[in-house]
Image (cartoon, rainbow, N blue to C red; front, side):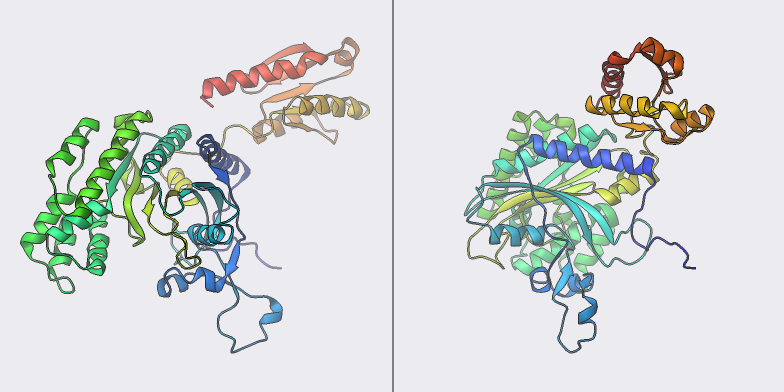
Length: 460
């Protein structure tokens, strides 16, 4: 007999936790759609040549290849034809390039699907996980105004998720590159390497970054590194303070000035979008490790739990699909790694399994001969939009109540001989520990009122 075991690197939940996870997915989807984003799904696997155009070596070591049993006998044919997607950005690039002439630009898409990476086995690292992405893709050009709108989407999502106070940290890589140019770091590849080290500042600390940049491989002067560390230490404390800190930077190279102007415009529009100033700030150490980010970059953190790290990140890029089309397709987007976020929130005690089931009512079976009546009651409740289960097998009533309680079902509907004769039902509200009687034809409307009140109190 084979011992049942969950494969390493996956998150498998019990029903109560799955309900909580599903509600987070629904909240994210609902907010993406509120801002006018359209759903897209791509296949779980792509052609290997498509996936491996992005970054080669390191990516290739994390890719899961797909091979049919028939192909296993063949040898010497190189890499398998297909591979599982490791993010949603490469599939998006392929999708936009392939359907370019069928899409309307700017193309606003959201995508919520699982991705797969050959992560090293350790707590909190997943080989299968959900990503929840949005991107706005332009053709030839894309206004920086969309960068501000993306920040407003982040605020809407995490406000609605209700997992605690959070701050969206904002920067612009043009500003950083322009500043590095003034410090003598003019080579693009060298700038990218410095940016990667600066991005580690909040995780590793200033001493680590200073030692790395002055050490072998970089060889920067101590004075130059100190100027960089002073620059990236900038954090704003409100909207006016953010604008004042930008003004205090003065002017610099064309790249520097462009980054400065873009940040200022984003800040002004974020305020116009109604995002409270307590929810965003400048953080000049935010660089994002991926080299294709070229302008605005975002990272979002829970204020009370900085150890969790970024719960949502992304930014602006100049050319999404250069490997697949000659068209220039600039864009801006974000990603929420929901599986890891849910796991971290659960570990921190910020989230638990749902107290209630997705089943809202259960029709008890009082007597075997009354099954058709129970089925009719359930049918009417379902027609009214109430998720309803029927006890299909006769057993003691106490056992039926115990089942409903353990499953998190709020309402148990009872219709015995007396109730059926009088055209009523008895409802047990397990949440309030109350019991009431209602006319059979008014049952659905009564339960809907109770459920709406509960949603209003829960803020959903």
